[in-house]
Length: 322
Image (cartoon, rainbow, N blue to C red; front, side, top):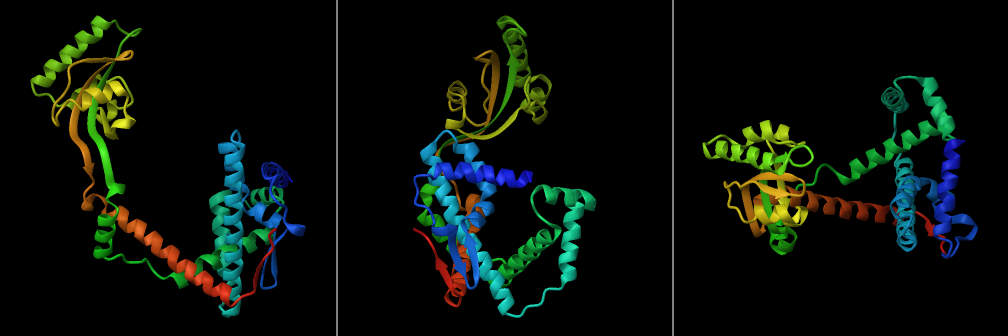
């Protein structure tokens, strides 16, 4: 019952956010062959997304309304696709051994409930769900996943030529204005120590640096922040990600150079620039994997759409919207 109340709460809030929108006739959104999809089906399906949107945009009514509309459209299409795929499975005469589903249910029981069947039953009851409905959901998830894998094929291979072509046509996506990779030793000032004491400690560290002691080694001993265990390493940052005072010092240094003791806020810093890039474009080797992943996702989306379109063409799909 608790789960049903949560769903009711989300439906009520979403309904309020969409109160100005036209209402769906009799709550019927679509028919797929002989099965119906209702407004309630769709809202229950997108309920996790609704709660996330409420938390993110609860104080922005217009943005919330637009995001809820998008979630509803996407949720309805996903439900239609799901029914098309399940119907195609049945039409194709595929056989799914029920022992396979039993094994999947047992695996879920172990993973989510530690093998405690009573705990699983109690949780399902709190969500207004029976064991049989839960098992059917797992069966449908398995079928949809298996059918997508069968029709979308194995991993799509993207040729080097396509990657190079995408890179050449989308250079703006790989432009970085200013970027620095650096380490830092951060010393606390007041009230932990006076300005004079912090400056004195910083000067002692600088002497050790000039004598050739590794910056990371000194940072692991002296730095008084959470980066101490990493030898003061802060990673790669773009200028806009940095505090203005830090950026001013860092971008005035050359790779391999370290700064004097710099007071910033209540702390005192010694900075080392490991690498510095200004107004540059990432090279093809740097972004090759990123581009390949993008093109693979685009190709999978295209193949998936073509498959769903074919299923729609040989099925009866009717939308009911006002």
